Length: 403
Image (cartoon, rainbow, N blue to C red; front, side, top):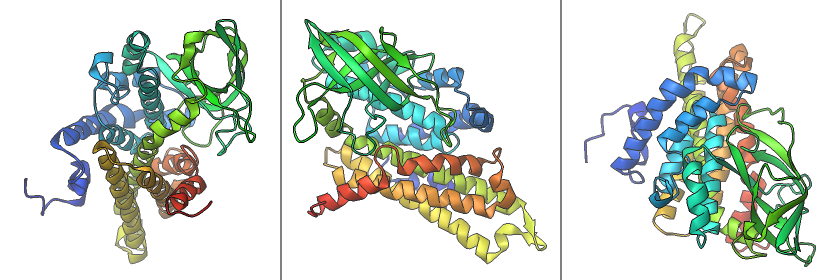
């Protein structure tokens, strides 16, 4: 192993040496590809896209050419055959400059992986859909959240009933990412398919074309953060799909999806890590260039200590994230690690963004400033993929507490 003892802090982070135990040379090469792409293609227009709330189809196409959408799918279906650490690196590096693009990639990647999992016994379907999904030419959204569901995601109001050889689906979904883009073609939709037991019906998963009669994609949400990502409600009115739209076993779709997607919290932790790193980079630039009371702002101890806190937050988030990802890739259970990493990293990102905007004063309140964008984007990180409260509940249950 090369001697890394005299490298700078930035060299350690940029080359993955701060988590050297988790990343191989292949991972670090992928990280360098991502960093070059972010510098050349993503960073220049990030502020403009966020302010305008503009989804950039050309940029998304370029990301598809990198192979980020199909990282977790086998090469036989056009994917990269990569591992979770590669997916986390994509989420992290993109989020250092543009969390909207990072979540666009994340949702497509988990949806593609989930389809490959739920339809593992349907190679004909996978050969039809996955190759274009891995390039980003076909977007698949994830339709779970409902207007009245919130954290109680298993309480599904959308229903699917059999009518001859078809299923007929009615209901509504809320906050569905990638559902209204030029590439959006399908939604993996969760619907109740049976009688309720203790207030909750068995839930099944369906692959529903977004252009099916009865499907309406609602207007885009005017969001605080993730402004240049695509998010809409979906409305389904007597949507008729064939029997083979059912994915997996009837009544087990929700349970199977949750079991499979436990790892999906880790790319969100990675996004949180990237956002904190973005705050650190932007703040370092500011405190070195800005003068206050006759000397550089960063030479004031009170300022320097807060910058050090941002660095500590980013590093802590990164260690927790890649600890969980390495364990998953090694075949170990990660229910506890995924919940802790998501909790710690998302809370750290919010704290880092607060400190960054506070240190930049009035500039931290202007939308063109990178840290302001990070501040807006950080807020959702403690909500999406399970709130901080849900993560604490999962950790407590793992400790044997009856909550």
